[in-house]
Length: 377
Image (cartoon, rainbow, N blue to C red; front, side, top):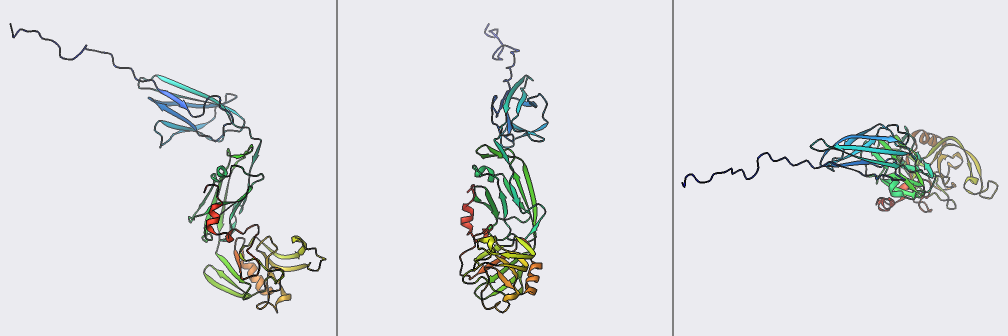
């Protein structure tokens, strides 16, 4: 009787219980439905939970499909970004639709219709050096805007400089409509430099947006640095680290002293008329002049040149008699003219004037002050 006691199933419950249903997939879009004034370059992010991303489609307001690609975001599991092959346009309606399926192959879909911003104006800046140029080691990159830039940090963050020899270069806002880039020291010689100004879809502020992207590539040539000493009346010319010429000169007179500091060569004229009226002194005034010269190498927009001055050969090497220029004999000025290139450095020292203030006086600014001029500091 004891051995014939009750027996039963020790499985703990009913056999064949239904398996639990998979959680439904969920799709969310970063750009909310009905959004307006959207940047045409905003990342169109798609997040999926409890499922796998399926089809992604973008159409414009007329229903035409926009070709693009989908890529996962490595840092965010379950997140992908749709990127157009071209560019989304300003002032246009778009609809983004994305689907995902859960483990039971049940599909979920999300859709967002948004409109890109309609700028009050679009802007494309001018850039120097120009694409394809070869310049000296002292030439900064200069970007000029037609209108004042309000959101400087947004614009600066889209100005990307790369070089074949890496540098520590930093941007410095010259004004609300001008920004320069230079390293802490002169550019390394024989370096390739590219600026990618990726400004399309960037909000400059006050209703102005970037019109398009631009890329400018240029070369840094040989290192030419000359030291013009107004105290000793001598200019030393270096090719790389080698001293190649030591020339007697005459710098600016006590009444018209040359400015101190590194000057950047910007222009070269085989023949030129030196005209005092270009800096506010009438030609017919006591200090006025209109003089033809040869082999003129411009080193500032303050009227300073290195040029031939056969009339002052007797003073070259002993007295400063010019109107601010560096005077040489014709033969020596011709050699220097043929040696020079835009972007070379002519550093004037020991003049009675103050430091250079010109269109390019970048190298007179101490590095810590230069860095402080970045909007991203």
